[in-house]
Picture 1 (cartoon, rainbow, N blue to C red):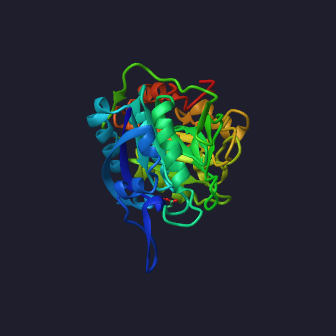
Picture 2: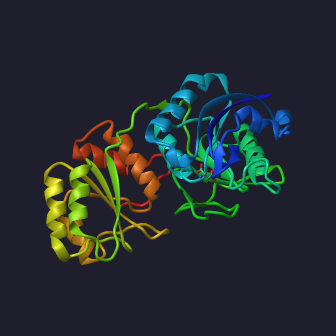
Length: 330
Ligand code: ASP
């Protein structure tokens, strides 16, 4: 029988109703007691790492999960992490950089309704997650509402309905239907995992709006060593307020800038319009292409923990990790 380690971090799935709303309180053992059928598929041990609404998950918690998996890696065949849905896509992306090439499945799941609610999605998601941890592919993935999504490609796209996650710019890897796994695509994994234990949190994300104050761009560029700018469409920078000059000076000061798009699908292509091409041709900055913003944030944190040298940052950023980037003309 397969041995699976379940790591609890909190989230709706483990929440109880308090006076002012849902709060994560149930332990991993309590969650498991709602899905006795899992015991027929595998032997499960539990670790209660955190009891947090995922709104409060920080990069240090990603590192904590990765460390736990590293310490226990040889003792188990797979890992199930129960997690709040709100920032699960960030955690899935971060774990994809902190634990690379894992031949064993590392599965995140959670729910939109607590496990004790009538008609909850928790039980299905937990059962499917254990099934995938036992029979699925290695690497980091989210199993949710019957879909298996690559950790670097997930985004929360519905705030209430059970179909909470979408795979962005990449097909779903598999589906789980009535306890059967249909594996459409196998994730690329190695023979041995490579673990990292650091991220650099000196990374900011700025979403542009029409009329964004250039002072805000200057502030963000001064505040962070790595700044991701979520622009419009395929990407560009407004021409008012000397924003170009602000970014040029930031690059000259050694800041790492990444242009991406706030459009949900198909990614950036900065060279198409003058407002983007001017940046691309003249400044040493990066663009995220088809990467999700969640993956770009986590990847930049992972990279900046290793180097600030632009050439090395560029090489690492464009080198695919867990199929996080498929297209780049750099
Ligand atoms: N606020 C909750 C969380 O992210 C939402 C959920 O789990 O669905 O922890």
